[in-house]
Image: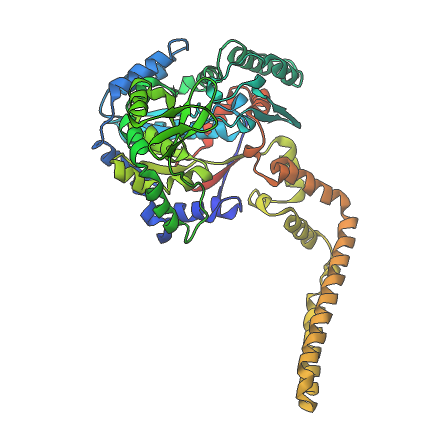
Length: 531
């Protein structure tokens, strides 16, 4: 398939926060919230510093080998897992919850970004090895979010069949009716359709849990690139985090440390997430509920579970897998178990990671280079045809619809609807009249100014009416502009935050992944447009 790649700076798209833009542009207001800048020099420094922090590589590889027992180990993935025993091997990580059918397109983009960056670093640092890792947020219990996805114009939602707790642990029984409804919308029949149908039904109907289904799906899509899937809901890995978990239970250092950072960051930017007094959940097969400390007791809210100090420390020692970090501690856990040099996340993730540096310093855990994942927009052939007909550049597409309409009318209609010259002439006349009136009676000055304001308003109202008249003359073109914007920015949002990968897989097959990977520039502060 013939494709072209265009790159538009994030700052020119209007879809990214000031914090994200300032961070990418090395603004001084962001300097105190990270160690390594999101660029080649920052990564170089991160790689050098990472070697000074040890991780339990044997425990990591043992856990991964166990987790891959029932999954195909593609040759590159097998090599990457075993290479993690070597002190010169590092990881490039992205994280996401096990959304049903991956949820939205950016799930795929995150992973491909990690793969592309690992490939690039392997070329640039021949004495070292870099492994792309998908860190599965399997302990998230927000089923409303994780169980929802869209396909074309249809919304699908799984209610979990009455299950509660961590979504990754939920049984996949009951998913068949939903999948059947989805598959009815696939077509036309062919290689891509058959392949995707087999992939999805095998993932979700032949694996017991959502975590296992997601592992299978991601492994089948990305194993060819050597991606390693890691499920942190693992007793061996949780055991590595016991010192931090115990400290949080007993002393709750997270809250004051992050609150202090929030006060500093909040002077200039919107805060993404707030800590709780105690930032841990208690995890069972039936629930994932917050732990609270009340006097000398630790309670699990919405349950009858209660622990004394000795009881909860004994529970942690015997069953570390039952203690689940919240968003404030998740990154700390990730960097405790992985020899990671870079973390790739969306805008919201970058924002809350910039709140965490001093927490990592407190626990003497490596704080990685934080990278904004590359955003991607697909422009299909029909939209390319529309764009060409309307004579818009690709960067024009990020303008608001009304601005595009005005631009089009300004370029293609007569200038009779514009009142700029008349406005200047009227203002000159009124200023002359105002001077005359004021010279006769100074108290008339305010009245003259008010009259000019009323006239300007009336002129603007007339101009809007004339513009609407021009729009009516170009109704077909206006409909095309609206159709183009709706296709590329559904619900006035980014395509990647609405669409599911299935639609694009049906069009392009596995080539879909290669097309994106080829276009990704891991360290560029740009939005990728594939046309």
